[in-house]
Structure formats: structure tokens, C-alpha cells
Image (cartoon, rainbow, N blue to C red; front, side, top):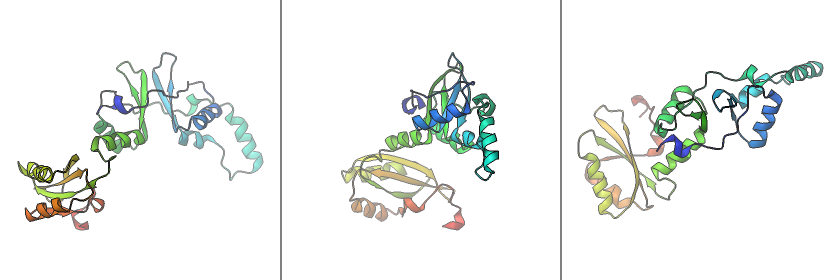
Length: 225
């Protein structure tokens, strides 16, 4: 799935000359945490987050007179004074997998989506990506997630899918990830059924190890098993 299918297209934006106080009002009124900064032609030149805005407000620990002075000074600030200029953006033709990896790498909560000319055409957040991932995985429908350890060799995945099909259970999605042992993989099929006991028994009879998906995570060290 491409970013263009999951991004928000109606983006709330501001200009360089927007005051900090006005930006806060815009952010609050629209219940957003990121405001892309654009030129008149729509070209992206920066971004401001709620954290950026909070950082320029006077501390509540200051004496009242100092707070008043700081607030008066704040009226002189524009977005150009505090915006992030080197924006981490993403292309509309990138996949949601690309976006997820970019989030992991940059720790950014949202990415402006720009075309090849640098024109802003959308924005995609962690929440948008989570929604897209849920759709791709099919987990928005009631079902059961299984965890299975398999040998890393041709045909293992087909055996599992065949068992599920033979039990006349629909498969919502299937995720394959690395496992702690070098020659094994963790397989997570999402079955669109609540009673999957027969599938589990058959897989165990075939020699597969079942694991609890809720206790498994990608970063687990072998010593934590």
C-alpha cells in the first residue's frame, strides 16, 4: 500500500510569517500536532510541532513579572524563528513499510508528503500508518493471531497455509519475521475465526512450536527467552 492511499490530503498549513501565538491557536482549533510551513506556491519549507510551540512559552516557574515580559516578547516571534527547516518528508509513491522504517530511524511522529517538485500534497502520521497497517493485516475483523516457529526452508509456509485451508478457516494475513535461532523464522498468521484449536493441534502434531505472539517482540534477546 502506498503512502498516497493513507495520507491526510486536507492539510492545515501556515506560512513563515505566521505568529507563534496564531500558530498555537490554529493547532488547538484543528486538534493537530504538526503544522507544515509552506510558501505561496505550496512548496514545503519547514514544519512546527506542538513541542516547538511549548518550548518558546515562558516557564511557569518564573516570577509573574518575568512571565509577563516573556509573553510580551512572544508576540514578536514568528514561525520562521522556531520552525524546523530540514524537514523529514516522504514521497507519495513510498510504501507504508518505507514510512514505518523511516519512523523507526528518525523517531518523527509525522511526515509531510511532497511531490517531485517539493510541493506539499499531504501528511501522514503514526496514527495513519497504524490504521493502514491494521487494514493490510486484516486485524480489524474478529479473529485469532497464532505464533509458529518454522525452519527457514522452502515449503514450510505452504504447509501451514494448507492446514488452515483444510480446516475451512479464512486467512486474514500472514507475517513472517526473524527468530532468535539463525535458521528459523517466526510466522504469525491471523485467522478469521475465534476457535482455532484444531489448527493448533494439527500444527503441533506436525512438529511445529507454537509461541505466544503477545510475549514475542522483534528486539528480544536470546537470553530473555
